[in-house]
Structure formats: structure tokens, C-alpha cells
Image (cartoon, rainbow, N blue to C red; front, side, top):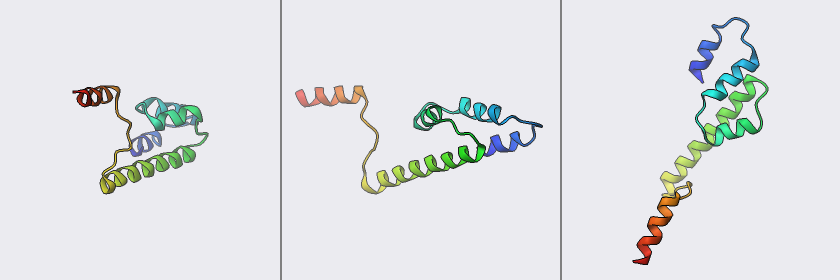
Length: 89
């Protein structure tokens, strides 16, 4: 985000739509990019606000996993098969 901000201020007459689309295209697939695709932000401030919200959510999940020893991620199909086979015998 910081890198994009520093570069975008150097571009004269940068269109908000172009800026938001560029940021969306640069994101990895995941819950955050899914959220943005479902409801695209209309301003850079809204985008930054949503970024902060997702960062805080990820930090809370990591903290919870560290403190409680829990994993919030679902097991993969391979992990389910491996565990099922282990239990069978």
C-alpha cells in the first residue's frame, strides 16, 4: 500500500478508477480480494479503511492462534484423507 501510494502521487491526473483497478489487480486471491470484488471501494480512503480492517482481523487471528494454539483454517482435502486413513488402520 505504501509503495502504491508513493508511486501514485507522482502520476499526474491519475484517475481514481484506474488507481483502484490497479490495486485490485495486484492483490493475491483470498478473502480480502474477494471482498473487494463483491463490493468495490469508491474512494481511496474507503480502500485504505478496508485494508486496515483486514489487517487487524489477520492480526487478531494470529494472536488467537498463538495464545490458544488454535488454527482457524479449515483442513485441506488431503489432510482429511490422511487423517481418515490413519484412523482406519
